[in-house]
Length: 275
Image 1: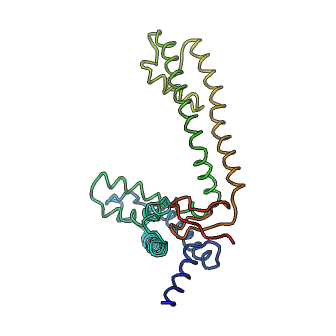
Image 2: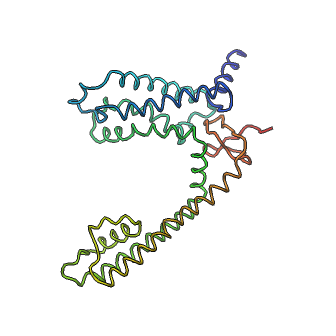
């Protein structure tokens, strides 16, 4: 019994803890496997499973994919076995990404056209496993989470502004017989393209008043693009100051909690003592 408990503790220190020597080595293996898997996906001549191209598949790509599948499957099973609450881990963001990294390897076995396209797209989700190894990614996620309400209100205001501007350009330009603004929707589309400074040029105002409005929309675009950046920066700085020693949740495996945190950001389990 003591031997089993000791083995479990050693495995937890390796798989769940990022600060131990064994944990760092384990993470290095997972990190390298992710990079190899993505590289193989980029170089695969038949990423969509077309039978005509399947014959030209390079042997080493299949070997790398199978090796990465074995590593990801072992990592997923170990996490399920070692965390205190496997169900919470399974339905957390980290758990879903880990599961998808294994599940989406079996795209060729899917026969439903709809599911096949979903699985084909899902194969690229393995890239998100890299986020577990980037501390700044966790800071960005916390910044987005902390400023979600503010950004949501801002985006709703922008949406209302786009509708007003789209309707305005439609009213201004619709009097011309050769107007490209046949509906309010086309006006809203133009407002979005113009405000984001994309400027496709497929729909353009012809009247002087319409061009004046276009100039105003372009100038508004600079400020509107900058505002979310400022919101995220302030939130990111605030969360960065709260970061302390890296704590790992033994329930779901989430790492990098702020220094004043008592519970996991993902599953709510109690965090280990910092003493």
